[in-house]
Image (cartoon, rainbow, N blue to C red; front, side, top):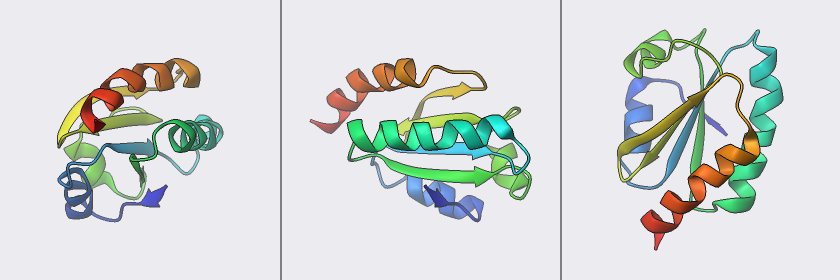
Length: 109
């Protein structure tokens, strides 16, 4: 995942129109550290067109507040420049991947 350093960079990545996943995490969040590689692998193996980014919430508070993220980890998924859904805290990686399949296939064909 690429690290996002400022709000404009986040908005530019979304405005490409490509499928985008932004992963909000924190330095001292053990759940974030365990979940991140599983999400990265699932996205890479199933959705090659997805662009994945990470925002460190404890460092980039402006970005975190802009997207109204209140807990970590939180994942925001964007299709066609619009937020499609957000998932947070305790999620099933396999269910998350299944939820992405249909909209991904519709938006990328």
